[in-house]
Length: 603
Image (cartoon, rainbow, N blue to C red):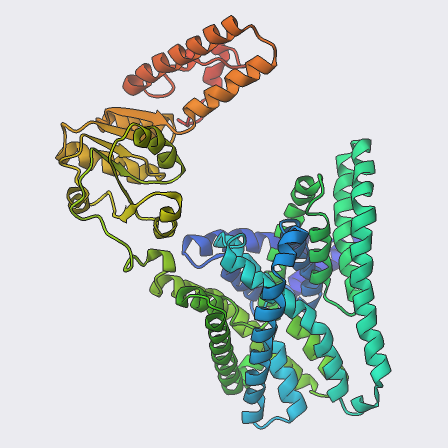
């Protein structure tokens, strides 16, 4: 197969650009990632497996994984730029304690402990230092992708992890300097030379800050007047790659430069457009990075040094988990958050490749040791998604624990409200204002814990269970309101309540028109689509701002409500396509049949 690929490459070289490698990479990702996500194994593991399959030690469709890795590192760079766009300077300043406190404590503690692995295996101090510190540097790409998939980037626990990653990015500079110092003859490097290196790094950061403050926003404003979207995209890429290059030339990480550029543009009026322009490149290149990591796993080296690699990976990951957990607990994080952080950050990272290459270049480690250490890092990266899956499966999340909450038991009120999110909170206000007594139950433990500060007492209880409904006082309530935000949960509760308490009026929150029809069939006494009234209010305001006469606005809104109710009555009996002739649209009624594909939501 490799020979066939080579012949394709030779043929392509004679006729133009070779598309075959790109097609293979995209095809591997398209096949592996959906499959692994369907199996519950996550996209990162899918990319890694695909890379291993098509790499030198799989089907051998590619022979040089390092080249792909160097290009794909731009995915990490763009990811950090997008994160920076979400981090206004004020937020970053507020994180300074976490960056230089939490981050420094974790990095310092991990370095001190991980050096011991090399020493225990009989390696010299310098080699043990390089090997241990390389593993301290967490994989930004893997952790950020995991946080993104878990929707945790904007949460406090996610911001704390980002703060640690930023400190690790900064740490690469002094670590490279120490590597040069520990090299044979490294003592000859003068203090002045080291201070100059530090000054260059700080100068590059300062220069980037000044450029962002005084040049970037005016530049995008000028380009915006040209109304050429492709130029704006090119400018966005120029900013990201230019900032990354500036940091790299100054001896800092490219990811740090991109992050700073994003922060500097976070308060710009062009922020959302920049994010939209960069996002497609980020996704493709980040996937390519994981493919490259999978390809770079040298199975020959793993097989030849299996015992050493197994011991090293186990020791490094175990010790790093211990340090991360201990530091997290020291800084007042809960057990669940500390455990999750330790599992997410237990692997070595892509910056270790830079550190090991530098150490090999100055003679601290030889080429074989460099290959073994690189394999250790890659194996730890491969193991991380598996560890996260096991963590999620066997470790209950903090929000799932309700031991310290008041459960629904012997409640009594005129109204039982099941679900107390953004919808239920608004519904409750007129009822409380009228003096109604309301029993509130929910399963969101975070909301329950925070509710008292806003004047609500919510009891922990699952409305889909009959025993909980009895304990919450459903049989004595004058009314039951189902305000849960999951359509299947809502439907299940409605069916259960109407079967057990058929004479109690039941009002339910509907997700959309089809859900509302399902609730009617389940005998809900009243249902309303959660966005229906707010959408009509906005439409009414739009007509008003278009200077439509108030009497005409009233007539239009009355007719809209009448049409919708008439449609709904037809839909209940005949389905959502039966009332299409009553929908106001910009496709003639007689032409609509040709566009039918399958029943969809027609809110």
